[in-house]
Amino acid sequence: MSDINESLSNKASELKEQAAEKLQELKTKAGEISDNLQQKAGEAWDKAKSGETAEKLAQLKDEAGQKLRELSEEAGEKIHQASDVASEKVHELADKAKGLWDKVTGKHESQQ
Image (tube, rainbow, N blue to C red; front, side, top):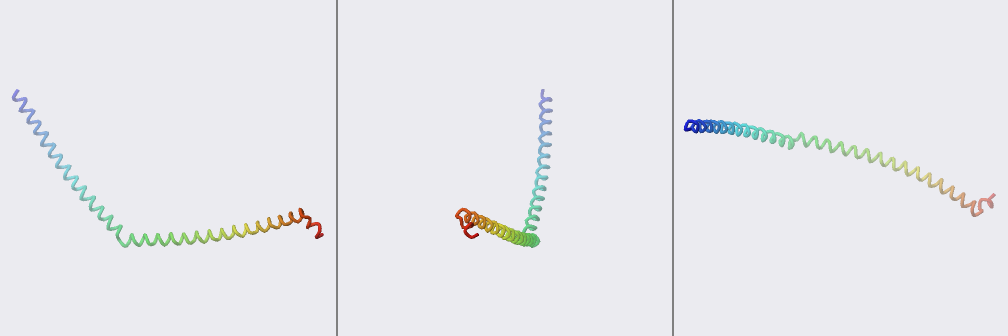
């Protein structure tokens, strides 16, 4: 029985050693990954703060401003066109209403 207990104890010790080695390997690997992530984050931050990024943002802002001006001009032209058409329609309707009013009030017949 003593041999069995000793054998189990030895096996448990071996497993404990293996687990400790694996744990150490995992800690080392986690440290490497952490260092790598910190390096990549630093590089990304440096790139974000770089003049290249600021330059690109300024370029995009200029392009957006230009597009906004173009769209604003187009909208102004379309509003002007719509206003002209609406004005014509209002004049046409006013003329028709006047003609109808003249007919109703008899002014049309008296002018003839």
